[in-house]
Image (tube, rainbow, N blue to C red; front, side, top):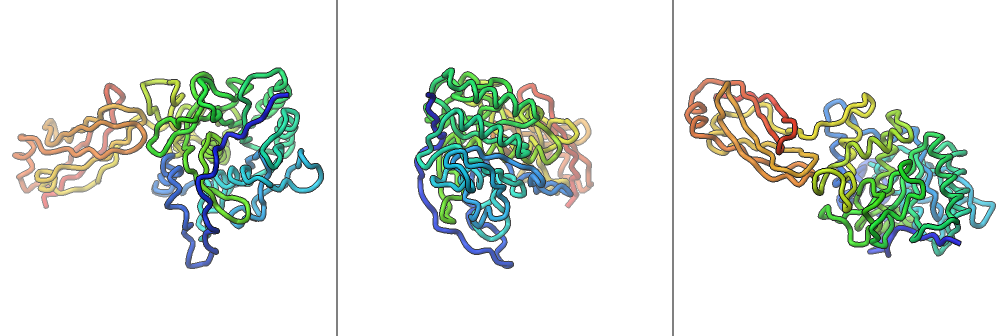
Length: 418
């Protein structure tokens, strides 16, 4: 019989129950240590003018795992009770904690003044128990759990478990995955924690998304299986989420990376994407943090919620290079201190910035970008720019940037005389 392994490592720390929500304490107290949400640029979604962050409203994410503690304050009222395929009748309570951790990563309530926040904080969790208190289970239970997720109307299925070796005993799981994929459900699986040169999941290649883990410095986690079959990577080190007994804990593993990804999949499902379209979108918008193109360490790149959601409903993909710069700035400031430009590059390269007034380059600068986020490039005044910027006339300028041969980005700028 094939042996099931959970894709989480030992708990790093158990945090005390974090606060009791009040009207004056809407900020989640653990949010400032949830580095994973920042690493996938989840906060960027809410910073766009007139575009609030989507939260997965109306979406169901099935957690096929050790159960979920539905009474947890950050999950209460948001968990749909699926079957307990281990102990039979009764709700799928969580005697271990692993499934509860996954549920909180995906959909813990946000801005309620307690704990932390989930990636898709308005999504609902369908709890399906297939693992016992020791996180042991059978392929038959997992297959039945996947079928239960389909029957329960799931939009996304999270499988933070895996098998260290291929086996004919997994054929029922493969068949269940195929049925779920045919039903238009996005299936997210963990790559495994054995540092193998292959994804320990999926047992159904190409129709599920296999997710590996990165550390806080955006490098492949040493434990993360990688290589053949790896789709993308996501944060998987010291990820804080809900735990048994109304607690919160920090855990590392590709389980956590898969759950973070399932949360972003729920955001996309909330925008109308289904099944394979969700998986394709997550791959298309991942940030290429390694050598150009897919690689063994990071697959297609680092999960990016901001890029995935932007333009998803219209079927467009965020540009490879985006600029963040002030719309108005004084000419004297550019002449003396230069112009700071945020270079948001979705792959590594040198970001070269030029500021032009007519045909004159008045400032320029460059800086290496690692692809994981925004780097600040200071464009300093050129000799011609210092002469031109001394005048008292206001001018229109254009900020241009390029990334090692990639399509450039442009932004308009008004240079005030004072």
